[in-house]
Image (tube, rainbow, N blue to C red):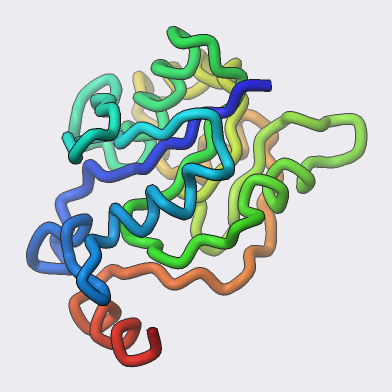
Length: 182
């Protein structure tokens, strides 16, 4: 099993008011904190939807502006082309990812369905996706129905997992609260 870690970072950050991926928490960019937490859990890390430092960059698919699903589609496409079997997706604004994230999601599917898809019910952009799910996602994105991560999960039979509390920065106030408790 080869696992690609994908940081979904192509959002517009409209609620935040500036580029939240580069927002600093204790002097470090949120996206760098995420990359450091993700790297030990996967075989390679990419940033989807933007360029960032020395990390490989992958475009949203089929185009920017499709929300997290465009990022997940970009990551799955990259995984298929590069021979990865699974993708572990995370947002660029969750700076305190658990060190056992991969195990939490990979262990979630029903017995006999190891390696199938799972995502955190309260933060579905954090997900474990088999590369074989790419055609289903491409079909969903080409249609006119819901373009939510949950709709994709439903389409492929993914398991929604009760997640541990994971801080997610959506506003400047969220970041300020995290800075006070860090």
